Length: 117
Image (tube, rainbow, N blue to C red):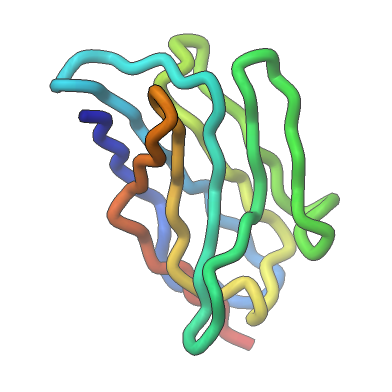
């Protein structure tokens, strides 16, 4: 079992910044991920991919966040961050981190991000 725990969400005004963190562990030990993604789900909408990062450092972003969001990891490769700048009300939603391990997807519990206009 892989456990993912997100933190760093909250309420911010439009134009502000937040930095989300996701810490991965397996059976309470450090888990080095091969690929990690951030997703979000706005009220009444489908969950969508925001950004991904693989073990080689390759990143991918959905068009709406390019130039504003940055996904990165710590040196131990068990933590992934999502630095979110120039936030917009459309960025509001529950943000989830997700990883794959032996062909199975694991999700964090989700964390609320609310951007007020």
